[in-house]
Length: 216
Image 1: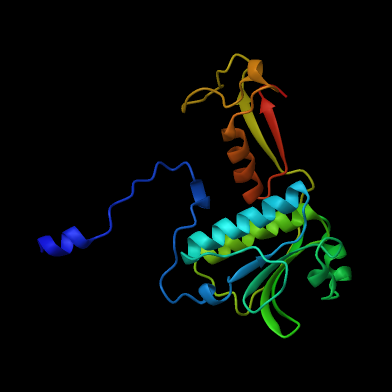
Image 2 (image 1 turned 45 degrees about the horizontal axis):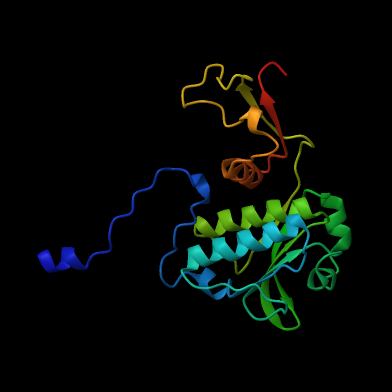
């Protein structure tokens, strides 16, 4: 009916820019809504701040509710860090396991800290925490219940590169989607926000390097 159509939510077009990081809201009543009530990610390094930002923003979009960053562990928290940067992670006693997975490996696990049921993202290195953060958000976005979560990952290759065919004049060998992202004449004075988005997308896939220009 006309009344029903007028009450419907407005359509929202997507241009694809957000790629797989769009974090569309989950269905009402999804269990994640009870397991993403706050984020405890105390590291204040550049990578640590990225982890906290991705978790707070991603979980808020998935649950359509505020997910605050917190300094204390409580029921339903997502706890992220290394034993060196996050005391709640250190208290779990997973150091030997995390060292065996290396600085870019990670553990995602449902656990209890001081009686509170939490979801933990832990690694021996901060890069591993970031990769684990994106992995957790991917699981949540695809509908996984985190109640029994127990994932251990370690990259098989040390160097995981994305290879470009960009030329220094801005053209791209066999490129069909516009000119190069890299504006060499403007660097380092002007850095496009798109470069940050590019790095974020790469990190979400576990990529840790890039060959920027052709014939390298």
